[in-house]
Amino acid sequence: MTPVIQAGAIYHNATPAVLYELFMDSNKHSAATGMPAKISPKVGGKWSAFGGMICGKTLALIPNKMIVQTWRSTAWKKADPDSILVCQFERSASGGATVYLTHIGVPEHDHKGVTQGWIKYYWDPWRKYLKGRKGEA
Image 1 (tube, rainbow, N blue to C red):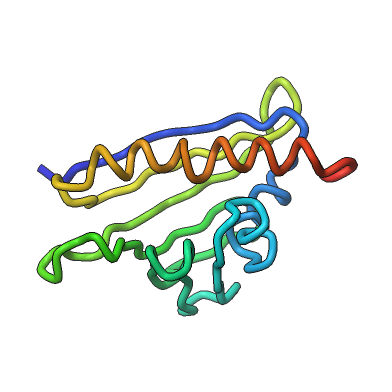
Image 2: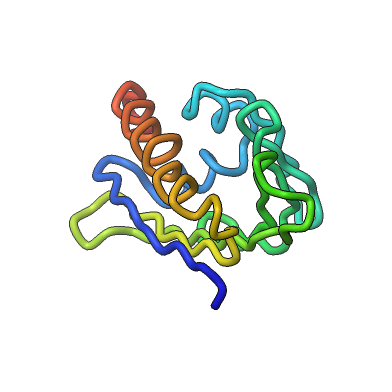
């Protein structure tokens, strides 16, 4: 069975467009996570984050709504296939925005680390970053 990670995070003072940009804009991604990111904002473009520790290719984009990418970590074995990441961005019922994540095919040996990593390296730092951005948060 292919391991699947499903998670979500609500950002009360953000829009789907702001969250989408945190993923797809190199400068904003770097600022929000505190680590270097290089992201081509086009379908077929390559991306890397955390100084190249994770990387992949963008498979599909629906601006401000959905991102589909291949995703892999340098900690994975060469034999491990790339995983698939699907992020969806929606307006929250309470105002603000929610990001829903489905991460398919993370190797069993790194499943726990990647699951915890989404919170530690993305959701929590995004909250801190957005809190400091008046008018955009």
